[in-house]
Structures are given as C-alpha cells and as structure tokens.
Length: 94
Image (cartoon, rainbow, N blue to C red):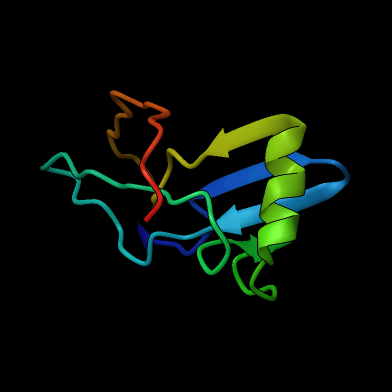
C-alpha cells in the first residue's frame, strides 16, 4: 500500500504532450480543490520531470487538444477516490 507519484494532468495536441503535477496528494477523507493554470511555467513537456513548456508550446497544444487525462488514482491497493466538479473557466490576464 501507499501513494505513488505520477502526472496529475496530461494534455496532448499538435504532436506535443504536456504534463502538470499538483505536488500534493489528496486526502482520502476530504475533498480538495486544484486549479491548473494554462500557461508556461506550470506545465512540463512529456512527463512530470521534463523541461518546462514554453508559452508557444502551451499555445500549440491548446490550439488543437486531442486528449486530456485527469489522474484519479493516488494509492496502491484498495481505496475509494472521487472526482467532482471539473470545470474550464476563463480568467483575466493582468
């Protein structure tokens, strides 16, 4: 048993895969909110340990998203997890 490390969000498009990792594991007894910024400095190319994606790479993937994967498993062995209220919300850029 125990937790394992993995990308939390994978997004692909235009031949690129971008990975985002929250850096924290959700508690099995409490809901947790994650906000994933769609900008350079937040995503890595390929895997959670790849180089940081440039703004041009993020824009290229967003221009033609072909898949979006959200991690739903955080623990080896039996457990109960849930995913609720996923939303894509525009924000204002300063």
